[in-house]
Amino acid sequence: MLLLWLLAGVAEGGLCRSAAAGDTVVAGTTAAGAVTGQSDGNTGGSIGGQAGRQLATVTLVAGEWAPYVSEHMQGNGRITEVVLRAFAHSGIAVELKFFPWKRCERMLETGEAFGSFPYVPTPFRSRFAEFSDPIFIANSHFFFLKDRMDGFDYTTLQALQGYTIAGALGFNYLEWFAYDNLPVDVSPDEDSMFRKLATGRVQLAPAEERVGWMSLRRLFPDANERFAMSRTPFRSEPNFLMYSKAYPGGKELIAQFNEGLRHLRETGELERLLQETGAEAP
Image 1 (cartoon, rainbow, N blue to C red):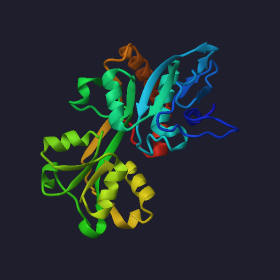
Image 2 (cartoon, helix red, strand yellow):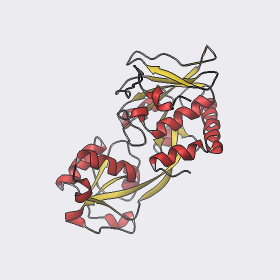
Image 3 (cartoon, helix red, strand yellow):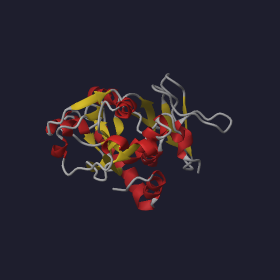
Image 4 (cartoon, helix red, strand yellow):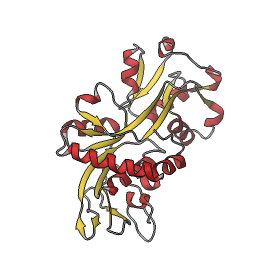
């Protein structure tokens, strides 16, 4: 079977590119089960076919969260592959576009997009969205500079009063920190957040373990020597596909997605894909 990551870009001479911001990626399956699809830039995309018929198409949006989801990686990340495979099992093609996370949420509020991933439930998000069955478990920690806070760890979020904490727009921990009255220096994205950490402007930067290390090593060649991560995670939680309450036929679509996800789990495909990324199965 053609690997699914090939449908997350434009195949040309056996090569493919990842989707750029705002690009459309459409995925489907043929009757024989082979994965098909292509991107056509910003024009709305072609639609993959099944047995020569046009598939139903669902619109998804996502932001940068490598190695799980990324517009810069081949195949756009393993969690993208899981999501596309789950939909393909039910014969549903996916139109995938990349935007900042905050815009993804707004598009679900208005019903402009069906869903976004990966997300966790929060009171704010539950106003306009609901959630699929769990896809994987994410463990989030605090990152810090070794030369300033070597050996740092903590017991509860309340114990972090007095620390300067960073944050990035669109991430659920901003709600949890606000609940505990922790002041946060908010950045537009995680790269900006980690740059503040590197300069000492903030003392702690929260991130999922693999996402944090991948970002730091990309930004700073000496990341392993400069940065460390708290032993204690501040969140260990399942991540989901978040879908819009305003999107037509949303209940039926998520039921089909969940069925595809169950198929991946029962066949062992989900565990295999997650192991390749280092993620934990729910």
